[in-house]
Length: 137
Picture 1 (tube, rainbow, N blue to C red):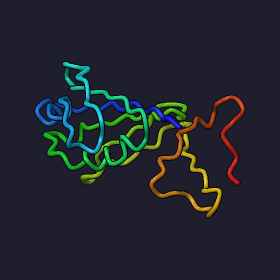
Picture 2 (picture 1 turned 135 degrees about the horizontal axis):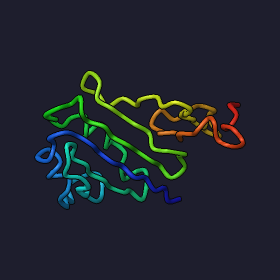
Picture 3 (picture 1 turned 90 degrees about the vertical axis):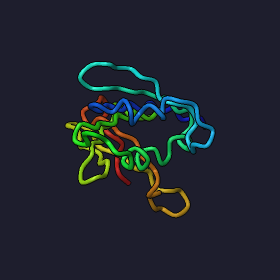
């Protein structure tokens, strides 16, 4: 099953840090490269992945980069089934998801084990959408 995901990175003064990620590189785990989408006060870069496996590990890679202003780093991710973009920001050297009003990350348990996959990104749902959020089992 194809799963599309769009990722946007915003960061102040990070053109040098993001430059290698805008170039093709077959040695990277992730296919594709970011496109520069902004030249204002904040730099901006975007990429679209066709399968989740293509962007697994991206957050870990981004948090490992030597950002000139880590407090300015914002990562927006919209997976195919998400109702809206999720927001991650640097906190103590790690990219942490920031809770957004009227949203909740929902995880489905595995049909066989009944447990939630810790590597699953789940889906970000709006709690105020028509019909309401999915019910927890």
